[in-house]
Image 1 (cartoon, rainbow, N blue to C red):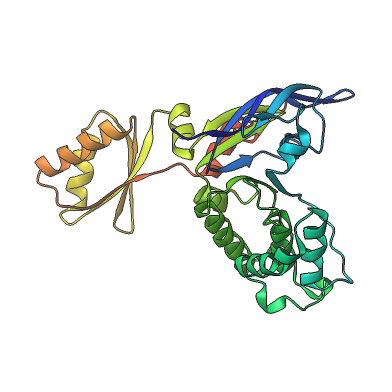
Image 2 (image 1 turned 180 degrees about the horizontal axis):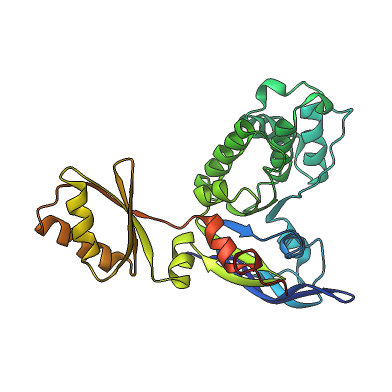
Length: 315
């Protein structure tokens, strides 16, 4: 059983008449890549800043690696690497000078710094830019440099607020690959992003926040299954497609069937057990099934269903 790296208890933050975070309870297990999803103003950045120790909550508590951040903030901050959505860089410094500066701020031994900086630049794929001035870097390179900065003190837990914001597709792929590598190194990562498709590809768990409340938590599949007991299938058959459709329409759990480009799309009132029965029925009826693929709900569709955008509620 994995340890819990982060736990929030009734976390609340109020700004005058605005309730930004509302009694939020959340757990992130050690080694997870946890995706934090929400519309602008939902409370993501406020929550992340509180967990990072940069903002005091109105009420509630945060534990990082079992330590209450309100009681031992300096000890907790040593375990955290934070990359904000907007960050400053010193344009008149070279890349290596920039990282040496932050290493000194963290009190890292000068004898270790050269080796440390070289290894971080290799990790974020900036070795070829080590002697370049920061202001000459592309946005994607600056993002990776700031990621290296957040890793300078070897934290257990990373908080990354929109790390792929404004990046082109190639730069986003590079960032995603680096995050996957960090996960294999044992880092626990809390990441927010508006690029939901890419987030769903790398995250082990997702938390959806709306109006300051955590409204769903788990894998995309788990959240989708809690919302609905229906599913979708894509089926390709070698034998007569019309006969396959006829067989499918006789199955009570099937709600709709359509065909396009040799693929049969099926809406099913049920999940895994029902899928197994459908496949069994097709085979017993002599239908030669080439492929039988359950379709997972996308993170975008789950998000839209759970938040106001999915139900048209303006409140």
